[in-house]
Image (cartoon, rainbow, N blue to C red; front, top):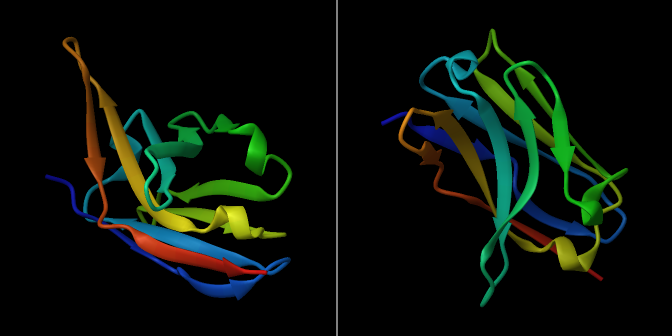
Amino acid sequence: QVPLVESGGGLVQAGGSLRLSCAASGRISSFNAMGWYRQAPGKQRDLVATIRSGGSTHYVDSVKGRFTISRDNAKNTVYLQMNSLKPEDTAVYYCNARLYTLERPVDYWGQGTQVTVSS
């Protein structure tokens, strides 16, 4: 297990900003990708953004231009800077670490942090 601990969630008004952090107990550089997912009440857990070990990033269309994922390998921490937040961004945000093996991808998850955006 690679414990992942998220922090930085909270309540913010629409248009505001939050920065989420994901601290890993192990070396994040050993993972093929780190990412953020979110799950709203009654909905499935969806991808928000990923950053690969080489530094390339991917965002879902709904957050492009507003969210930025980054990583600090020295601190074993991944961040998600969220700007121009909207009520529809309200969800529990989960940190993910993915390792590709010969058989299948192996995923590690944090416990989640609540983000609530009021209108």
